[in-house]
Image 1 (cartoon, one colour):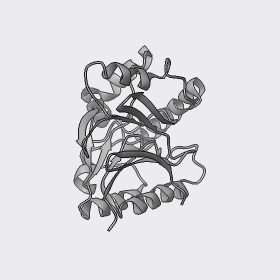
Image 2 (cartoon, rainbow, N blue to C red; image 1 turned 90 degrees about the vertical axis):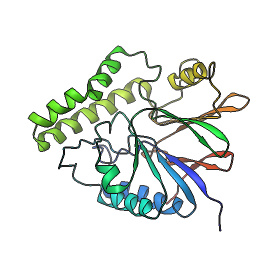
Image 3 (tube, helix red, strand yellow; image 1 turned 90 degrees about the horizontal axis):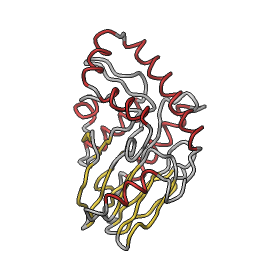
Length: 251
C-alpha cells in the first residue's frame, strides 16, 4: 500500500465567467480528487474553490454537482477534507459541512502534521495595505450584512450580483498584479510570513489567493508555498512524510 499523503489545492474558481468550458474545468478538478484520494490521509482546499458562493438557509448556488458529489464520496470514505474560505467563497454557512462532510475553517490556522508546524490560510488580507480591500473584506465578513442580504435579496438576484462582483474583483486583481511574483520585498504573503516567524516557529506557510506558484525558503527550516491555481497552472502541494513538493496535475 502507498504511504498516506496530505494534499493542498486552491483557487479553482468554479463558475467563473472567464472559464470557457465550465464542465471540463470542473471535471479536471474532480479528476484530481480521484487521483489523490487513493493515498490521501487529508485534503486541504485553501479557498476560492468557487468563484462565487452564497448560501441561504435553504438555497445554494446552482451547479457544481460533480464536485460536491466527489467531496461527499471522499469524506464518506473516511478521508477528512478541509475547506478554508477565500475572498470569493466567504459566504459559506453549514451546507458543505452538513451535506458534504467538509471541515470548515473561517480563519487562518496553525496545525501540526507529520512533525511539522503548518500555517494555513487562503491569504487574502494578510499584509495587504489596500484600505479599500480591508473595508470590503470587513463588510463581506459581517454577519449583520449577510443577514440583511439574505433577508431582502432574492437568491436569483444575489447570484447575479455575486457573479458581477466576482468578475470585477478578478479583473481588478489581474490588472494590479498580473499574477506574477512581486519579489521578496513586495510580496505581501512573504512579508507577512517573515514577520510571523519573528515570534513563532513554522515549517511551512501554505497559501492560495495570489495565483502564482511559489516555493521559497524563508529560513533554514521555514518555507512559504503559494499554490498557484486551477485556471492556468493546475498545481497542488503534496506533503509526504516531512517532504513538501509542488506538483502539476496533468489529466
